[in-house]
Image 1: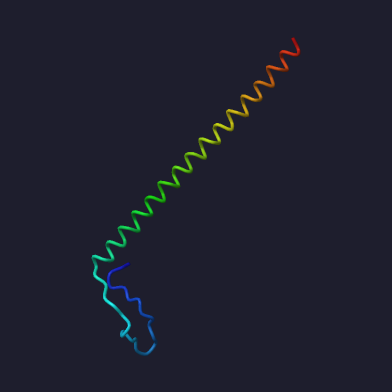
Image 2 (image 1 turned 90 degrees about the vertical axis):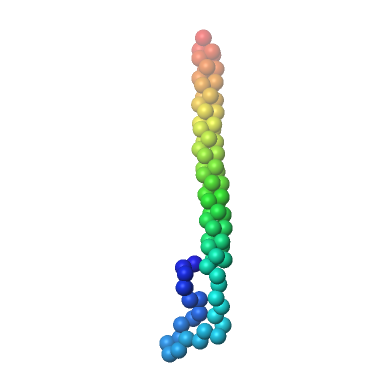
Length: 80
């Protein structure tokens, strides 16, 4: 949250601040650090998922290639 940000609805005539509270800057900074920490952890997990999906695609491609090579060798063996 930005410093000095007012979280009270602004009325067109006069704004009532009776429900407003003051929050120490240190508390907001700690919250922001926690948010950044959780965001970084989430990004790390998403990168790992992406890397795993890429690896899985490569493995599937290799399997398909090997299956086709086996089929090719079997057909060649039949021809001989």
